[in-house]
Structures are given as C-alpha cells and as structure tokens.
Amino acid sequence: MSTEVIFSFLNFFLFLFLLVWFSRKPVRAILEKKRLAVQVQLNGAMRAKKSAAELGAELQAKTQALAGDLQALRAEAAAQSRFFAEEAQKRGALLSQKITADTQEMMQAEIIRAKAQIQSELLSLVEGAVVQQIREHQGNIEQKRVFAQDMETVTRLLAEGSL
Image 1 (tube, rainbow, N blue to C red):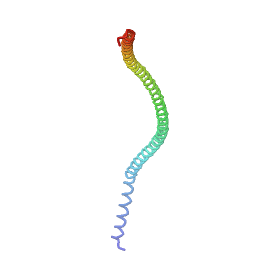
Image 2: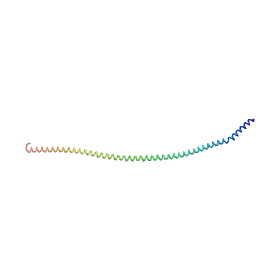
Image 3: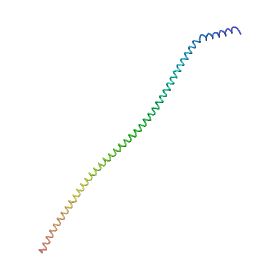
Image 4: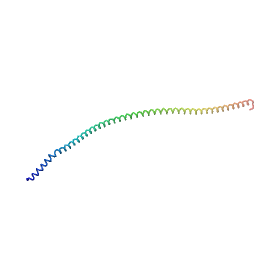
C-alpha cells in the first residue's frame, strides 16, 4: 500500500483517538447527566405508580365501605319504610274506627229523631182518629137521645090514644 493511504489511515485513527480521548469526559458527563435525569424520572414514575396504587387501594377500600354503607342505608330505609307503612295502617285503622263510631252515633241520633217524628205524627193521627170517633160517638149519642125522645113521644101518644 502506499504511504499516503497509510498516513491517511494513521491520521484517521489518530483523529479518532484524539476525538475519543478529549470528548470522552464531556460525553460521559452528558450521558451521566442524561442517565441521572432518566433515573430521576424513573424514580418519580415509580413513586407516582406507588402513590397511584395506594390511592387505588384506598379508593377501592372506600368504595367497598361506601357499598357497605349503601347497603346499610338501604336496609335502614326499608326498615323505616316498613315502620311508616305499619304506622299508616294503624292510623288508618284508628281513623276508620273513629269514623265508624261517629257514623253509628249519627245514625243513632237520626234513628231517635225519626222515631220522635214518627211518634209525633202517629200521636197526631191517633188524636185525630180519637177525636173523629168521639165526634161520631157523640153524634150517635145525640141520635139515640133524639130516638129516645121520639120513642117517648110515640109511647105517650099511644098511651093517650091519639095514635
């Protein structure tokens, strides 16, 4: 090979050697800096992941607690609903009994009033009938008295011989 080619290779290798020799520390510093930055980001991501996992577990626990609380609230609401339904039935029954008693009292009062009215009307009718019978009887008595007088007159006339 020619000397020029050898010198070119030597120059090239020398250039590479010097380039590596002088750029090694700054490149390493840059790479180390990048590595530390990546490490910091990785640690931050790990902490965030751990925090997210803890928050997820906490949320899961709270969700389960809320589910239990919800179930307890539902049970309590159902119990209160049954209680209020029973109370409503009791109040309805009491109200029904009161209405029934009031209705019976009103019916008794109406029956008593109707009886009094019927007795009053019946008494008026009976009084009217009695008065009518008395008048008829008085008329009969008057007719009998007139008849008796007529008979006396006929008897007297027969006894006198005028007839």
